[in-house]
Amino acid sequence: MSLIKAYQGLSSKARLGLGVGLVAWGVVGLYMSDRAEEKFGFTPSEKEKAEIERLKPKLHIIDNKEERP
Image 1 (tube, rainbow, N blue to C red):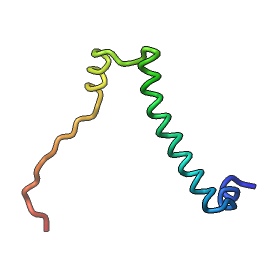
Image 2: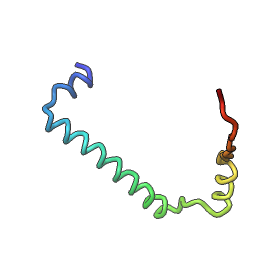
Image 3: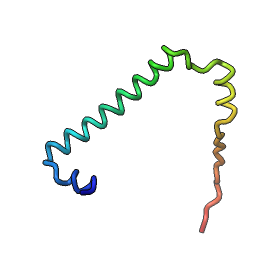
């Protein structure tokens, strides 16, 4: 039995509970990963932050006043 068939076989309340559980798991993971970084000393230094800023793509907005037909 495929995973999709098993999911579709669940009641609507069970599917809702599964969805809420997955979202909660994601939120807890995002929260705990930041805390774990701080606890284990993996926070980036100012030099690393500057390097990341240098590598980020830069967007330049150009106003085009000409009308197109």
